[in-house]
Image 1 (cartoon, rainbow, N blue to C red):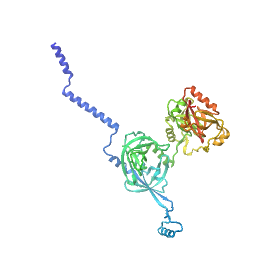
Image 2 (spheres, helix red, strand yellow):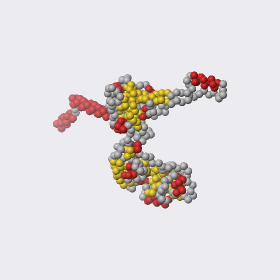
Image 3 (spheres, rainbow, N blue to C red):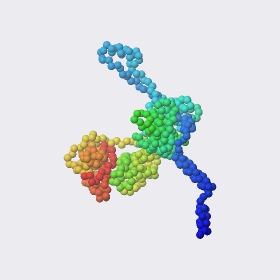
Image 4 (cartoon, helix red, strand yellow):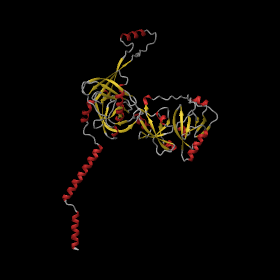
Length: 497
């Protein structure tokens, strides 16, 4: 028993670490914690101690832009003097003597920002900074000023390219990959806010992929202070690369409230390359009219996911030649997934004119791949559609279903509505304001040309499509509706009668 206890005691002592072991364990633990902290810090890219080094590095490439525009002569507001008054001649003589009888043409100046992208003097700014300018002057950080000429503009992305001539190579900054920027990354803006000259502000990327109003919008949102005059200036990442062009602010009072927008560099750089080479943009053109796929449209078409771009019309052009049809859902373009109409428009626009691309569409419950040779958007002819006068046809024999009063098209209705000869379908005579159809925008005068992606010749055709949807277990039927020639798809519940 004594021996056993001794053995037991020796074994227990062997399990208790010595002080030396404890110290080694503590040091090892500290090392692991330090390593983890460094890893997390590297991944999070913590706040820099100062932006001074970065500002000093990039400042020589940031410029102030002053534009001069000649404003046409306009008549000054004259004093209100009753006609025939004894003071009438007095005031006229007084105004003429002082040169105020009319306002002569005058020079109007505006301020903005920009940045140099090459040592031979190419400069990027916003289109709205230089639009309509007769003269453009570039002030550099070092204190000298050079005149600039306009190379090209792109109003769709609000980008312009200028060129100055210099006796020596100019300091410039490179574009970075805006797709690598993450929400929360530190950024620095530079420019000429409110005409105060070279100014720096810092913040983070607040959000990405913002759209304001353009089809090609891809804005980085930032809380770095951006004010009037910052337009056209660069938004830098911490490596001194331009990841955005400061373009707009969201503000109720005209001043910065920490919501600024910079056009992403991956959009800008492509536009700049085309403006430098051609003096204009050359965007790809697919030649289809499209709308987003909504949940009810996806259900009506049997799509597994709410994504893609639904083709509403295929006028003469690249897609018609390739075999795309109204009712196709474009799922991929040039091997890139299409999430919605905006992503498709941007992707097509960034693709080379004349390139043959694979377009995968969802049609009749299965996918089909077509080859489309892209045209040029700028050269595409707009398809002219006749407009209706807004008057709803008053016809007696109508059928009511889906919350709609419907009448087959005839020559008289085609003429009244301005519908192209040969078009078949059903005219909406009246819409129940309590119906789903009214809520989804259908109105008297609309023409329904397809249901369930099949052409309509009569009300019986629509009834058949509704019955097929019910029998197929679908809750909605997909209608192709045209208003003044402009098509769109609308999914209506098949139980709304």
